Amino acid sequence: MTGSSARRRILFSRETLLGLVAVLLLAAICVMLGFWQFGRYENRRDEAAVVHANYEAAPVALDQVIQDPKAPLSATDVWTPVTLHGSYCTDSECVLYVRNRQLSGVVGYWQLVPFQADDGTTLLVVRGWVPQEPDSSAPAQIAPVPDGELTITARLRTAEPVLDREPPPGQTHSVNPPQSAGLMGLPDQGLVTGAFGELAAEDPAAERPASLPSPDTSLGPHLSYAFQWWIFALFFPAALIYRTRQLFRELAEDEERELASGAEQPEDASAAPRPPHDHDEEAEQGSSTTAALPRPSRRSTEHRPRRAIHARRRGQDEEEEDALIDQQAP
Image 1: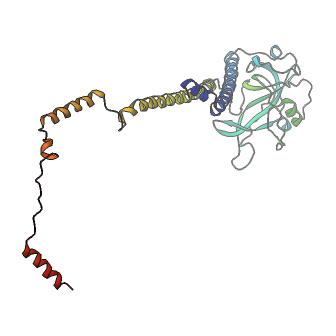
Image 2 (image 1 turned 180 degrees about the horizontal axis):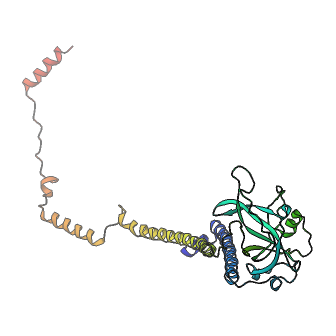
């Protein structure tokens, strides 16, 4: 198998294709999460810009911000201070306490009271925060609501959604003007339904619950989280490329080892033929050595003259001895 065909086999292998699908899926998820975090950052940035623009602005009349009491509050008008002249509803049924509201990490209540302006408009106003009784789900102390006419300055906030829960008597789970007005027994006529007010000042000044802190204008970690998700999206393609390069590198190393082993095989063979010149030199050395030794005479070995063997005639005594031996034999 050639190098190019092996590389194509790696690129189009089942593992590589499945890895590519997984990389595309994970990268897409990371990109989407990054845009989600970036969207949250943009929302926080816009909210902080509205707070900086409106929170410390000069108070204006309510009808300059909300012309129709039934209209929702614009997002650009949140935290706008408005001034109203009129009076609070001081009946016990008119005062509600909003549950599960924290101040400096302590759970308590918001005191919610309707304020009716001279023009008949009614705005629900949060006068401040009240702590909770240690052993019961009730306010620890009830700040009195001032009587008579006065002028208040309140910052407008968007109405909260309705929570489908049954609250205890005199309490509510959210500041939703239509729902809260129903709990107070107030008529809907002239009620501002899309917003409520957070008390900033009263004139004349009166005892009130603890003031609520200013809104948080920090942008949070959303922007950094967005960049982190986008960096994660780049990690998966980089990991796939790194893995493929590693496979190519291992393939190249295997090819180099095969070439090296093929080149070393003839040198290590024990039966390799010897060079011709070495054979000739040894033959010449052997012939010269043989020529220097004395050659044995062929005549001294193969053609050495042999002595002639002549038969000797037996004597009479020898014949008589042989005859005597023959007679004695059994």
